[in-house]
Image (cartoon, rainbow, N blue to C red; front, side):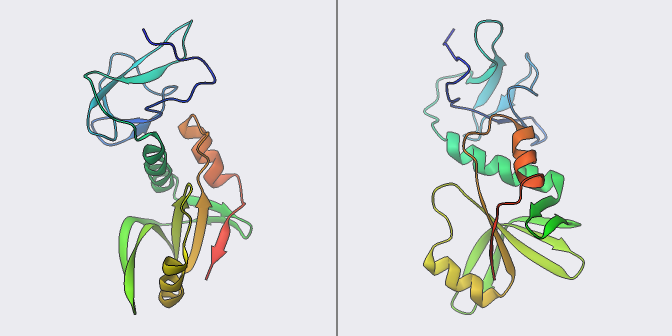
Length: 175
């Protein structure tokens, strides 16, 4: 068994069940099959000497740990339908994920769009590549409030992502 100690980073920090619901090693069940974001089968293992973690059932070249965190943020936002900013808690009645929005000189694909009454907010999740000059120009043409959320790449659980989205309020607002 490979050694996964408490402070080591996990290769597969999150996995999906057959319905597409996302799990972390603390909420997953041993003995069930899950899917990695690469599409390969993963299972949960761990115990007294090593913390719970997902492993690929078959050999895999998967090394997309950060990308799955990005997907996990979008999935949790879709489930929570809420986001706290310095202006308070925004609760959305509908959410679109990965939606194309046309601008005058091009288009963007928003990570998410949250709808509240007559208002729509573009939600962008970023790790290292935040909104650049080109995307900023397009967002200004679209003229919707955009909220940029810096992903915490150190999160280990779905609950930590929920807390980051709903309890914290350090967000960058772009108009």
